[in-house]
Amino acid sequence: MASKYVKVYSALKKQIEVGEYGVGQLIPSEGELMQEYMVSRDTVRKALGMLENQGYIQKSRGKAAVVVEKKDYKFPFSEIASFKELNENLGRRTETEVENLEILADKKRIMGIFEDDREKEVYELLRIRKIEGERVIIDHDYFKRSVVANLPLRACKDSVYAYLEKELGIQIGYASKEISVETASEEDKKYLDLGEYNLVVVVKSYTYMRDNCLFQFTESRHRPDHFRFVGFAQRKE
Image (cartoon, rainbow, N blue to C red; front, side):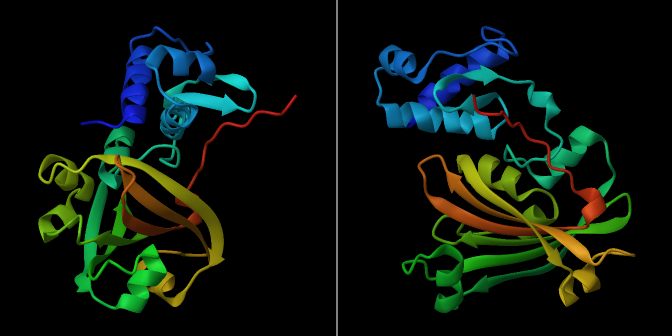
C-alpha cells in the first residue's frame, strides 16, 4: 500500500501532467492540500519535495509552489534517471564498461558508506561510461544486499534501475545529492579520457525507496565538459 505522501505526490503529478496546473501556475498551499487530502503538513511537504526533486514545481518559503517547465532540466540532478534513460532522451551514442562487480563484506567500509551497522554485505560496482566513444564518467555504486539480493552482470551493463524496477519490483522514491569539484585522482586519470583537464565534477547520491529505506550510494566522477547542472533559484522578497 502506497504511503500517504506518495498518494498526494501521484495525484498532484497527474494534475500537472494533464494540464490542470499549467506552467507558471500556483498549486494549492500546504494548508489547502492538508485539508483536501486529510493529511499532515509533514506528509504534504514530503509530496511537494518529491515533485520539486523531479522538476515539476519550484517551492519558496512562505509561498505556494509554482509549476515549472520540466523539460528545462538537462542533467538528472533534480530527478532520478539512469544513464541509459538520460542519453536515450538526448540521442547520444553510449557504452557502459563494467570494471568491477563484487560483494563487499567489510563492516567498517559499509558503516562508512551507509552508517548502518545492521548491513552485513553490499554490492560494489564500478562502471565506466562512454559517450560518443570517449570515457567521460566513472560510476561507483553500492547496493544493500538486504534490498538487492542479486545483481547480475547483464543488468550492470544495461540498466540497473530497469532491472530493479521491472524484475525485482523495487519502487525507487527519491535521492539526496551533493556536487563538488575535485582534483583528478589516479583512478580518474586511469579510466577517463581527461585530456587537458585535471579536475573532475563529483556527484554523490543517496537513493531511497518509496518507503524511505536507503538502499544505494553512488559516487559519479565526471569529466568537466560533460557535466552541466541546470536548476531553479528565486530571490527572497
